[in-house]
Length: 289
Image 1 (cartoon, one colour):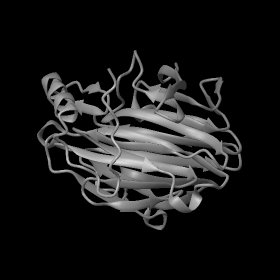
Image 2 (cartoon, helix red, strand yellow):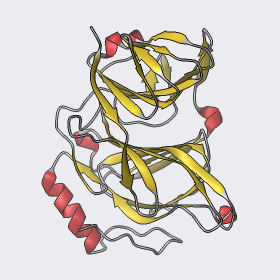
Image 3 (spheres, rainbow, N blue to C red):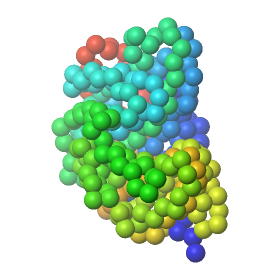
Image 4 (spheres, one colour):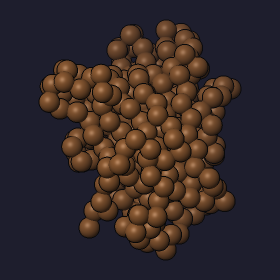
């Protein structure tokens, strides 16, 4: 019997001047563990006149994880951070009671041809930390745990799994793992996982219970302890999940909370310009009505 409870196809979504593939939330599955939102950006080839320009916008009640495969993004936030993220590194920003950030093509890449490809992820915060002070952390690619086992490459981007721990300072029990191989391999990792689990196929194919699944799908497992599949040659997948929260998480625009009234308050605060500003970036993204 198959361990799959749901197959989610990537759907197109618009984030301002950029089209992305939305993976979570999905009508039948609002979250996986503490993961409440996943966008697949690109791959996008941009000409000399195209740039990523997501102006200052707010977040509450979540941590954002940005992970690039190609390209570069300049992150600025209301804490005073100004960091360029490149492939393999992790930007981890915790909104807590309120943070504002912008994401743009760095100045030195403007006026040039460039590519952009990556994942943008939102992780809910435990209820007692939803109003914590905001934080920002940048973790270089070389500091992310990587290892090989039986011709399979693993990378623990965030969280704890496989008796390893990523330096990304997460706030709940979770994991976000990259698995790839140049040859076909049977993967059985149920004993390394916990809570809810899903698998996102970025490249290539996997086989599960006699069925073959291709790129840009999320497969949600019924039981983390039964997570096994065949990774086809040259496939790359991302396993994510962890312990779900006891309370539901609600999303309104860029805000996440266990309390719907808090979302309304954040909306009004943004309209009233009560959030902190981003130094060096005085643009403003209006609340979508």
